[in-house]
Image 1 (tube, rainbow, N blue to C red):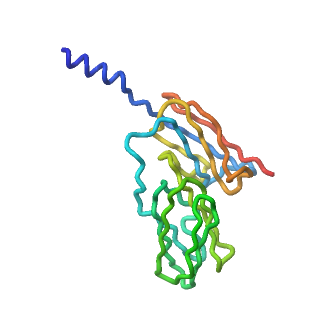
Image 2: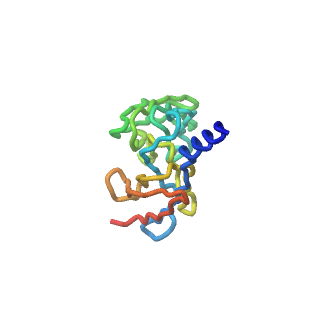
Image 3: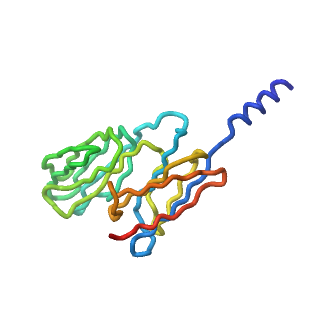
Length: 197
């Protein structure tokens, strides 16, 4: 009987405080914005440290970066394989990670470790039209909005949080908007509307 009461007390003192955050992102044109990165920062971190995991890849294919936007945790190693018949020279001048991958050809690969959080804008010295972004995050709660501009993040700790939204079209520092939120046991739902210039 004592064990049962103790177990019950322990279960009550550590309930499963997690909920779902739902965010709809609307572009400046009033239409759902696909591909926006939605992040939830919480004071309570999930059990166990975030691991870089992977593999993570930002390929050069059809004279473009594929995927156009890649989300990775701090400490991740990202490979940059060239799948084009032409050579590429990939670089970034971003504060979060500066690097310069000199000319390399088809089926060759280079790798970069991303050890600081932030947005890393990518370019190619040979093909000016090529651009992409790597979003390096410290939170496990980060996803991209779908074709309907909707993002769902599960298992977010209940309590105070900051919700951030990133997209190249956002006219704000680092192309990022943020707002405070309180995640309750029933979840949290909000809409971000991107304003024009």
